[in-house]
Image 1 (cartoon, rainbow, N blue to C red):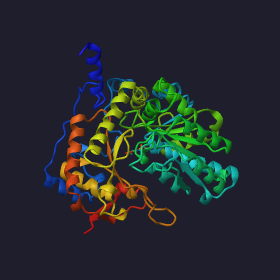
Image 2: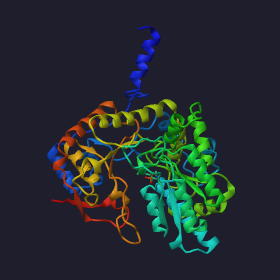
Image 3: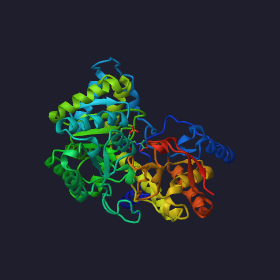
Image 4: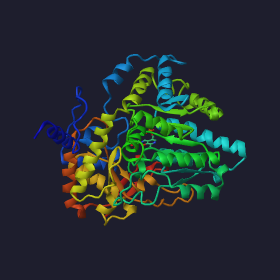
Length: 483
Ligand code: F0G
């Protein structure tokens, strides 16, 4: 082999599992408790992996939210925290990072994503009510797919919700570049049937968590925004995983292959009026969120959100965060967009999905932050009302100490007016990968655990509620096995 061939041979090795683009210099030891202790722990948790103690978990794939590693620069930035109650230097740094990266001018920090939601959701709905004299019960909000907390906030404020994913988004056998796109026909039909004045906002979730971390194309963001503007409906970008979405656009959308992640990010955010961010994902902080408005067009809404912030989160220049946390977040927003970092991160998820597919486990096509296993297909003997995703999560924990959440009927919940279970397009199990926390050998262990679980699926039992909470039931639900 000449040197060029050797270089390309090494490069092709990198596409299998990209080596970590960092050195690990601080570690957290983890224990693996015995199978008997795991059984006891799961029983005590009401057969709900969400309620397990972290000390009882070997590999924790519950979430990528606030569970990742932070970088040296983020850690160092924390020391510069200014905790002035009002107008701190740390807030000004965060505000100018947001303006620099997204071109958004009016920023409110919040303790996390749902902190931002509890400010904008009631405020935008109040605005419609006051300005048009409308009844809440007739109001409807639309999204490519609402994340559970966004859905819950909209519903407890009296709105109906419409999820408008594209056809086949949940078909784990079908490939498409942008399964996170919002269905434009459904958007138009909903606007026509309920009337634009009854729609207080449209939410574009990038990447779309509930569909499997699937990206939204720039073209779709642009088209949705054009339709929304025509009908004077504000567009909210729910952007926990904005950098991962930008990376997919760069890799998959014609015309963006030579654009930097920074350029793509700036363009994506032109197609929204405000954004709500859980900064615990792409921005890699253990705690933090942002609500930001692009310009003064919705200044009255911004001001009302600031007022609500004082009551719910804290003074609007700290919103529940200490100065150091705002400094760390300002740095994390930039770190999230590093090209080699995103290649590694998405490459690791792809490696896991391909490994699972290789042993015959059907998964959603690789997305941004997790492998989504089709639990419904893996456990055909368990009907949706016995939650195959929960049953699989429990088995995976008992066999291998791996913790994962269900993303299916349990998470989707009931229609808040009729009390009926909402029809769920797919019963999934999410193997969520925290950032820079686990390595290739952890991925191999997960694949191996699945190989063993798959060989014995017939013995896995469904579950029924022994306690069902009224909202966001997956967090606190308790179950028993169905015999
Ligand atoms: N929006 C999206 C798309 C999310 O994924 C999340 C959280 C939120 C909003 C709420 O943000 O947790 O900071 O209050 N997702 C986590 C997860 C919990 O595991 O996917 P938060």
